[in-house]
Image (spheres, rainbow, N blue to C red):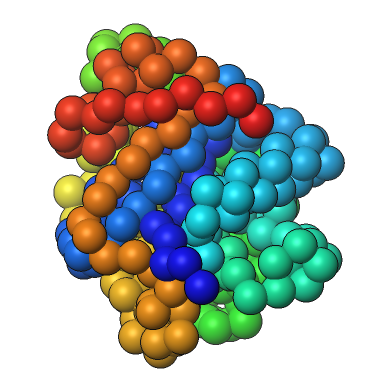
Length: 273
Ligand code: DGL
């Protein structure tokens, strides 16, 4: 058995906000990031398309030697994870594992809210899947979950408009729509990997005391915990502190944009999937 990096998949740049937090808690591990930039955004695509694209990318990461793949993308986690885990893995790679971001988030979200009312902001795909409603109900049945899709937020971030005055309109619009659903919301979850880049704008339109949960900070300790509970998987993960980045679109554009999401300069490699 050859050890391999942990694969981290996202439809584009967004998963870098999750990887950034994961690297802080697992600095010795190797990671192979794959952004499907050529086909992003996933958020408004059909179930079948998101499943097909995600499975292709997971298979690619397996082919590169990954034994464990994290779907850092909420949309992919909501639409494709269950099928991949239950239908595909037993046939294509029974000893490999694919984990998502929704379950680890659902496991802790109830601890943050005193009013027992949380808001979940995500892409149309994530929200319509009702995955958060279903998963949170299993763990915190007393929690009221108010959902809001924010279809314009990913394009704003992807196009570098996240800190520009033009973004204010759509940031305020979706937050107002969420707040109209309940006056008791005291915690909001950014259930899309792109949204942390809008955090400064989001804070302008919500009460100061409202908590805003950044998913990377939840997923990272959960992955650490998973590897501690599964030493057989941890042993298969190579640990030289290496980070590699793959994109299905222009490396030049990826390198330019990715730094904003990851915080450090990135040199990516092009892959055709
Ligand atoms: N990264 C995706 C997520 O977390 C959003 C981007 C997209 O729509 O592709 O939901």
